[in-house]
Image (cartoon, rainbow, N blue to C red; front, side, top):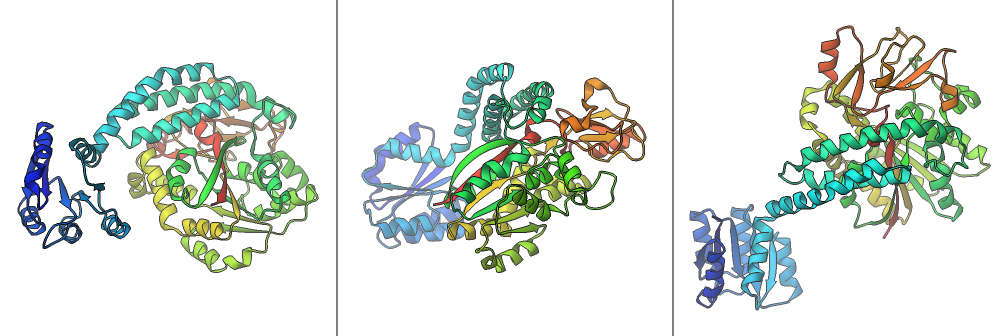
Length: 515
């Protein structure tokens, strides 16, 4: 039974309210002054305290301050006759749980108590009820989705419920995980049927989604044409649910236009990000700018030519644009950008790449401690939100908003937590990525992979005449037969990218306009 303390110098007049609360299952102690309330709170643990603001001796505000110093975890509801703004400001500044204006009726008090003591339970119950009602509708959407727009709508809905249920203590999240798996399986079949048409049909294909090579043309060029100065910010490995986690940090300073676009395959930095910055499919980059493309088997870094690739896209479209490119791998680089921020203001376009999330996913694979911190998708999102809040990233966004510049925020691909090994045999030149492989002597089960035997037709370079790409689907990852058990145990439950899933391919594209 929750135990409440109600302090009011006219407590005798509140007996009907107290009897009402007792009838609702609450144990209510009373005090006639702030001093008495503090003494009682020191002797007994209360779940919630109700304070009258205007009491003789210690006022409600003074009592509130002392309660918060001694027991900051106890929610406090303040009741007052005064509507003065400064009193309300002081109460809010002292982290008041609720603020009610007299006269109050018992149901108002009860509602405030429930909001502060039972909100998680009530939210859990309501979320479970709402998702249960939505379950059949989502199942119907999974079975009927036939266009990329319908799949994007479905994925948004699934992420919405993932965010809602992850904050509740219910078993519904397990049901959602099953439904998400079902949706991914159907999405894989959809991609198998349509991906070739998307990349070979040209820009006139009405059924093709916006894909990596057209991000600049569709989202950046129109803003530049209208005279806007734009920041293009790419967060590597940034999924839709991670955007949903950091979005509340930006709602006070930006209005938002939210879209999804489709990453090309492989959903890996070397291919997808270079396609964004060049406006070309990987095979076109390799053919037109061989010095800027690095093959899989090269020891050279695969993303060292991003600024030159951006320049080639502007040159190809005959656009004169003054731009900068900054890659931020750590907080030191972020702080340096903030110090030199004024140097960016004369540019038409400023491109900023944050590598933190990609680094975190790799660190999670290699570090037991990081794996524990990001044990599941909810924890992974939480780490993303914490990084964004406490790193220079948030201040960079604020600084841009203060100058009135628009931001186009996106990623090159997402990531998925894998848990099902699929055996693949390759030669020593086969790449090491767990979600896609490229080689000339690959051995695998065709039913377990998405197979591309003619890479150029899919916009992909072919290192050898007989090179084949294979892509993992759902939550699969590729494992070699040699030392198989150790390999599987090491990578099981890690976040990987490169293959086909909604999480990897359907990624956020957000236009942020300062308020």
